[in-house]
Length: 301
Image 1 (cartoon, helix red, strand yellow):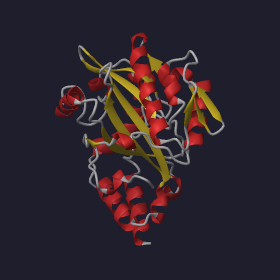
Image 2: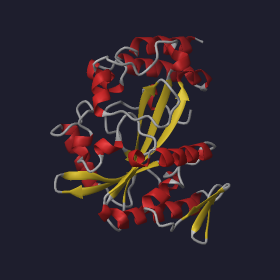
Image 3: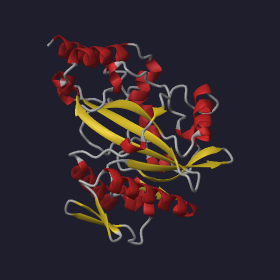
Image 4: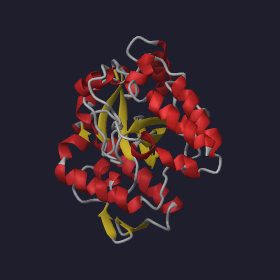
């Protein structure tokens, strides 16, 4: 496990931003090919669900593509070979000028999802995105909506809340040379990277109409979904690029962590301290106690 934000080291449902070194902006690992292959599949089968764009975002999209290619050439030459208007990734060849949207081209180069935000009269708005790996939300429902409305389902983050005001202020103050990152986590009952959830389904889940995890033995069936999120203001257009990198691990893999007692106990404590609204948002109302028991068992072994 590369990141364990669920271990008590960070508090859930907080902004939790910290400065980021651009050298670590994009993360490449052994799962590069499976992630890119899954993006190919989703673009082929569900293109309207994983990519959206406003017509006036082409310049910002191109700026994103240029920055990503520059970073890959400088930091990830072992996996990405940039030359003659294309990028070679193993046996893949991605043209940088194939006539499609620049943000879509960029998405085929990296494991991250890419979301473009723009300041409008009512705040920062989602104006373009390649989102192949949503963590229990729907891109089509959030497209072209203001940030405060996108966060409306999150406890204490909706329009008019103090958290919404803090986020808007942070977006306003973000500078091109000072990117930031944060971590988030959730639970799911399968290893799917594509894990959307409509607003109606979220309401049903919060009301205990459906379970996020199966009724079978939770330690064997539950997966921890970690999001590494970064925010970078684009120097030319002034838009903000929001990247999301997904890490999926079975809950049982905590047992193999070198500090598994601390991680398991910290996770159990975090789950135990969550109130009903936060558990409902994460879809864990019915499963919290089973998860805590599984974590305690991992800690004892």
